[in-house]
Length: 167
Image (tube, rainbow, N blue to C red):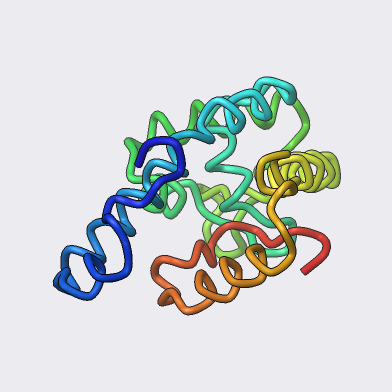
């Protein structure tokens, strides 16, 4: 998608496209949009001195639900030593703490600390701030796009991504 122009040459072309072709066109546009925001995302992480791994950890952790290291490594699809390294970094900064699991003192569960929750909240507040180009769209277009995206299945909706404070 270049210059915001559609891949097709108008309504008649859209009517002749197969459902699969339209889905592929849509997906290319979504992917292009997502990839165009990578610098913005990494700038936000840099402002908090966080890595992408740190981000993934903060997203998955909660102060009220301890998660064993093994479960974190599985969720993050990484080696246990890598999960340990991420947790060590976050623990050094006071964002997480290790707690003993009742019934098995060998297992440590990880929870967010109040500082971790505060940092996570501030980071997501920054990430949820719409870019100027989105704010520049008229209200009708914003509603149309929002409502269309709401129709996506849960597996594509980003439901695992923490909601903004305004939701």
